[in-house]
Length: 177
Image (spheres, rainbow, N blue to C red):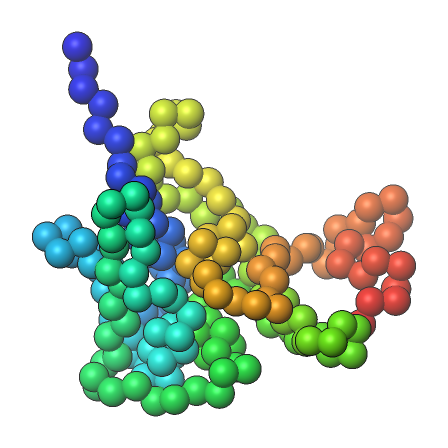
């Protein structure tokens, strides 16, 4: 009888992080299986600081804890304004479409991190997929990686020419800012 080797949840989490930063030339993601550590080597110290603030230092999966280390190129962090953490963390990332903050509607500002309209795939040995991969949107991965993002919403861009019932998507009824 053939044995199935299924990916552990911490391996899948590592692959989500790797998929999110695959299109960022300034971030390299490495998994150290011996120490159960995901290491993000970041060229820009400001981006390293932003990622260190946005990504938790560890993630628990039952009794197993995955450590996450953000390592800046010069071993020093450069502080970044908290309001701009996502801007800095995702700059140069090809998955990002744009980031907009809306004020004046609610008591707190609402920040929308909009990713490009594309599917990202990564290996999870998913038995429900012929190729063993998981297909997701970047917004779904961002929700897993950036846990404590209050007032921040991750979404997927629409195409300029996309319409529903004659109205362009992304501008409901014309009253949204």
